[in-house]
Length: 70
Image (tube, rainbow, N blue to C red; front, side, top):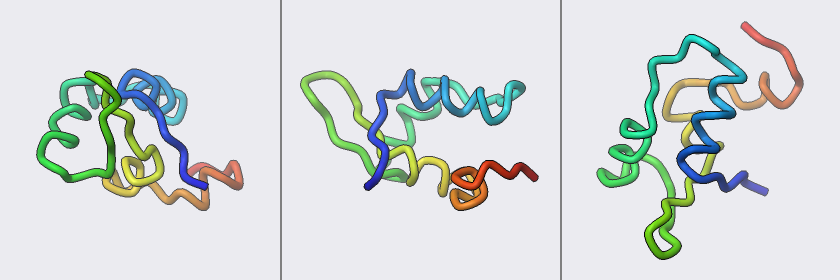
């Protein structure tokens, strides 16, 4: 099952993986608007497929699931 997160939740979880990330909410929103990651809208909120977002950034999801870090 894929993880669905708001843009703010995506950024919060990404910061847990990389506290010095340069990714911003505006960047994630622009990825949605240009259809570079999977999402859907609920009223005005973007609900992002978090796994697809991580894949776009080049994060190995299986490593994150197993708890190992590079």
